[in-house]
Amino acid sequence: MTKLNKKRNYYFIISCIFLALSISCKNNGEKSTAVIQTDADNGKDWVVLFDGTSTEAFRGYGIDDFPKGVWYVEKGVLTTNPYVANRDIITKERYKNFELEYEWAVDTAANSGVFFHIQENLAMESNNGNSPNWLDNFELQILDDKNFNDTAAIRSAGALYDLMKPKNKRLNPIGAFNQAKLLHKDGHVEHWLNGIKVIDFEIDSPEMKALLTKSKFKDNPNFHSEREGHIMFQHHGQKVYFRNIRVRVL
Image (cartoon, rainbow, N blue to C red; front, side):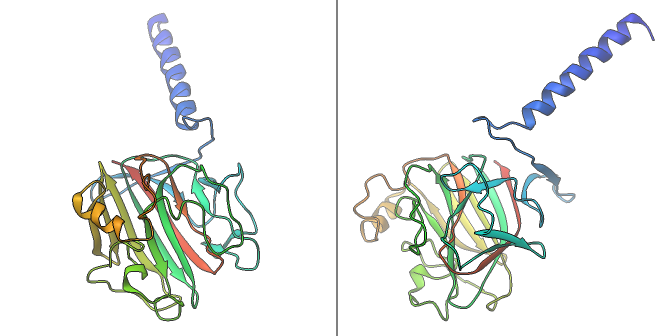
């Protein structure tokens, strides 16, 4: 090998090491062990947040570690424990424009939700049935529509909680998994449930502002004022199940 080739190989190795270190670290210093998954049909690259085993992509709201025992993995499913003080989990990474895919199921009368652009600026109110930020951020509702004590369509499974009813919803039975997709792109939001788009809106549109004035959030002038933050999965005190969670940056 010539001296020139040795020099090129040296710089190539150094570049690879630098790239690997860059990928393994978050912007705010949190370690990421992301697995990249590429769809063969469209070439889209996804970051796998939960593959049935590792919870490394998440930590508890307001804490540095994953809340083991509050959430646990059983038979490849991420599950909440309803017999302990509840605590939500958030992605270690923060996202602005993204597409999130996940599957969820509920036990009888169970309630949960998925939030985005979470700022983690409120105290965790453990074991009260509610989560921090639920009055500050849009929530895509997860629910047992038949047995939960609130059966209003605007707060049903698939709804944009207290703001928009899901359209053309097709919900699987209790205990069966539902496929969900959440997309945010420059203020445009879509929520898909079992292959059907059930929610579609613009965050800053006159229509959404009008809906907010009639909702539980009407007294919060800063409702969902941020456009970048964590994705949060809610522990509402009942048993819910998640699997096949992945995200890609848009």
